[in-house]
Image 1 (tube, rainbow, N blue to C red):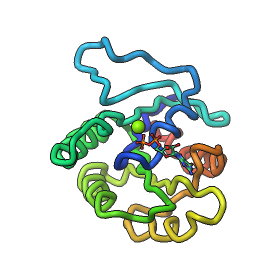
Image 2 (cartoon, rainbow, N blue to C red):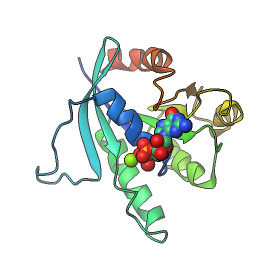
Image 3 (cartoon, rainbow, N blue to C red):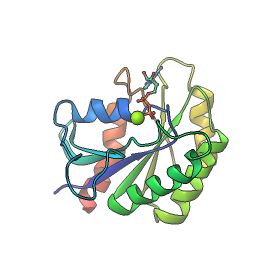
Image 4 (cartoon, protein in one colour):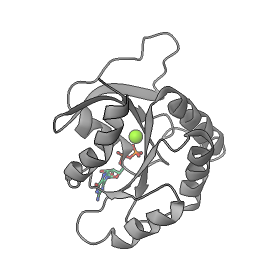
Length: 167
Ligand code: GDP
Ligand code: MG
């Protein structure tokens, strides 16, 4: 049994860092497949004993300020459509931003409750306030992680586990 997890969220919250940690070297080269762009990177993820497919929404970094909102929306909606579950990342050190609220709105409308919120960069105590702010998104209980330092990975696995059983 396997499911597809899409990592979504605004630029710079740590999506690709988490993707790389989950995938390691098991990255699927999808660039040359028809209909697949660099905007969605896909790989085989491993988290403890869990195995699943993971998608990184990677196409936002090069967007200009003007093109960013439209691209965020389009890319996120595509990822939501292709994935079984979305992992919505916010930066716990920054707290919830206006851009985060745009994503939360898209996910509320499109993802049908198939969302897990993760407050990244939560190593140490610098992310505590941002973690609690993440509750105000109204998308369920957040999980605190540090993609860079590998913290909170057991908690993340525990949250994803019930979803793995559904698909
Ligand atoms: P993306 O744009 O959402 O894909 O974000 P990236 O994965 O490229 O990361 C953006 C920046 O945040 C980089 O400088 C990362 O090193 C940093 N970063 C990612 N995860 C963490 C984390 O857990 N803690 C801290 N302090 N920094 C992180
Ligand atoms: Mg990225």
